[in-house]
Length: 636
Image (cartoon, rainbow, N blue to C red):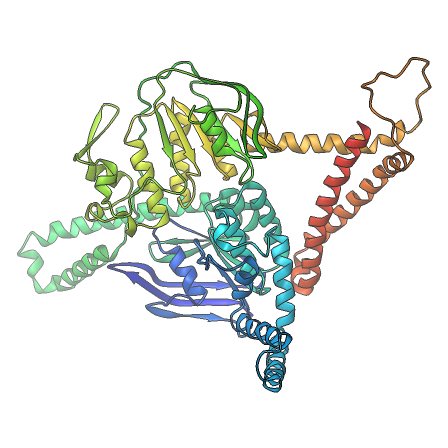
């Protein structure tokens, strides 16, 4: 039985229909990626599927008794409650009953009020909670909080953007949903968290509809792609590359068909203007057909054009952009950058990789001379013109009109040697002329990003600093931005968690290694990831070869130097001898669990077992890393 069916759905805001008699069916175990251009109605559709938004016409049918989890793009939370309270609050009536039960328990413990009445109320609440299986929900809430590495006692208002996204996912998963609806789940998550979420969704067996513009995430998670285009939903089984091929062919066929229609309509319009012949009775059918053709042409929704991106690199900077020698930066007891040295030159395209809170922004400010180091030196190049893209869009005034954001006090912008009217320039970024005087607060997330890019590119800059520019941008605009940055002759600093975007744009990477250590690597994200995998493999191979080194070396008559490593204790020697066998056993178990998780039938027949195997896989990864690090420490 399907988990969800959308039938004849229609929805419009203003005169443009977002959904035009759209149809969709989701079967158990499917993971559907919902894609489409910014502003086409994806988030509105997801809200309707979750039961949190209404359709103008049509129906949404959900399997009776199905549990639905929904995570919006910017989840609303009470900033004054704890993480645990926020997760439990997502359980609906269960959260209210649990709160009442705990309040009555505290009243009984403190001997407040009528004891008999309180006991009677507690028994009633216990019955209702047991009927809803609430105790298992509370335990599930504790498990998901631990899994998402959140502090249950932390106040929501103190959390970062990435932590709030984790909290929203934890809240949705705490009810053990059969159907999960996610709107841009990778926004504000670092690469490690995104890869962890990929593995979780692939192994959980939950049915899933998610909106994403992260092509790597889409390829790894989705079993089917559904595109919302001009009010209609089209389904494409398979991977993103296969979708691109089929979509290109569909657009080509549509263009050919429209050209034939327009040519035929033009011929009929010429005929009707001949006058006498067209008004003869025997041609009345032809006149009626022309009227029908006109109606069809008016009703046809042509595909919106592409964003037109232009970037002026301005005057060339000096060959040297920045040189750092032994730079260290601390904030209190925390060392964010430790003894880092690098030399960056004009034309370099540098990606910064690291978990949230690692200090990417601090390192950028040090490189650009905006922050003084505690130790070491920073030497800047000459003629630097720096432009910033802020992921939090703090540069945008909510009340300002779009034209004033782009070109305050002037009707024109100049890019290179070209002078353009601000209305036409906004049109290049797909803003209609009638919206040019609209305030910033009326824009969607993707439109705000497009506006910030338009403002950024309206000024010459030979150093670009882009902090998460890919959030909320549709895939087509992302690919155009990639091409623009590849051709950009200036210097680029890119902070992004979009792995495909990093691979397609940057030529070198600066990665956080932990404890304030940063290292340079050639290439993009995948080159860095391959290097890390190779290093782990070498550690594992060295651990496997450790038994050959167990024989004690011959004693030497030379005196031991004062700085020589200390001898291992008897217990440590035993531990070192046992480590290779323990690592081999874990690796064997890891392979067995991976084989089980790759079986699609497991998620249908035994979803609880699939869930348990997924948790065990995560435990094995942690245990293996800990054993490899311990082996390296003992060997050294």
